[in-house]
Amino acid sequence: MKLVATGFLVAAGLVFLVAEYALHHGAAPWVGYVRAAAEAGMVGGLADWFAVTALFRHPLGIPIPHTALIRKKKDQLGESLGGFVGENFLDPTMVSDKVRGARIPQRAGEWLADTEHRALASDQAAKAIRSVLAVLRDDDAIAIIERTIVARIAEPEWGPPAGRILAELLDEGRHLPLLDLMADRAHEWVESNPVTIDRWVREKAPTWAPQFVNELLSERAYRELREWTWQIKVDKQHAVRLALIGFAEDFARDLQQDPATMAKLEIFKQEVMNREEVKRAAGSAWSAAKRMIIEATEDSSSTLRVKIDDLLRRLSDMLVDDDKVRARLDDYMTRTAAYVAENYAGEVTSIISETVERWDADEASDKIELLAGKDLQFIRINGTVVGALAGLAIHLVSEVIF
Image 1 (cartoon, rainbow, N blue to C red):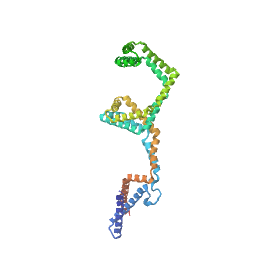
Image 2: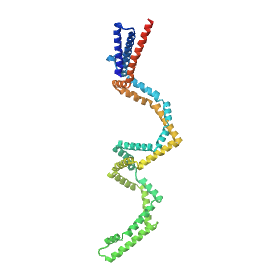
Image 3: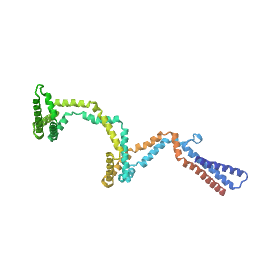
Image 4: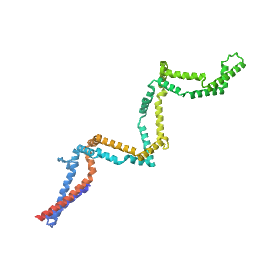
């Protein structure tokens, strides 16, 4: 476009020279009109070339005052642009009207109602989860787990809360099924292991005892053990059951009140928490959880993806059908947008001015010239054409008058 505009100027100059030569050699009077038009076209083209060039650089490299304006006024341009955006685009009332008119909750609900759109949203949610896991460093995650879970477990005394929990279980009778299970398993084991009992009796019997005596003792011990475990099984008030219950009740009370018992449990707690297996538990738990979550997000049929899709479907139904929820969301988004525009417009517009300020002056001038260069060259072309027409009109008027 520079070549085209310059071509118009060169053409006007050539026409002027030819017309001037012809007039000096007796050409017809009408050639004067051509000469006047070409001369005015040159003046208009040169004037507009100077004006366009002066915006971006010094014409011909001469530091004429009020030229290279964009290079000199770059920072002021950025401030003015930021102020313009703040005043005309970040007005709280206008922003509120735009947000309210956009009907974002309703349109989001209608968009999510489509199965394909919901699947796309589910995919994006899964990608977001994977991105968060990829960005989050394992060391940081493990440290968070250790501070929020492991440390919380190890910090308080275990005795009093454990004693209260055990006492509540005893009061609610939660121990009775466990006693029944223990009695059943004990009786079943005795019935199923007569050989083991016989071996125990023979091992404990004197070496000088006759064989038939050992057999009688073994049979008697087996019958007594079977009868004893049977009584424990069927008699809910058996002494063994009551003794176990009494021991549990005493232990629950000691855990809450006895310093020696509480101290022993604290020692046990420290031993447990200082074991390498426990120290590595946070890392193992995080690695396993991370792997499971990533696999779940990649599998469209996983429980996690199904839950996400179901959540999006219920959200769509709520946004489309529930007028109250939709109105509340609209009101919340409108007030939030107005608050941001009212309180943070300066921060937003400062991005524009600071960005322009960081630009290199020559680079910024070149970018703006390239952006608007085509239209600016049309200004030069129009200046040449309009100047020629104006010169022709002036010459015609002068001929008529004089």
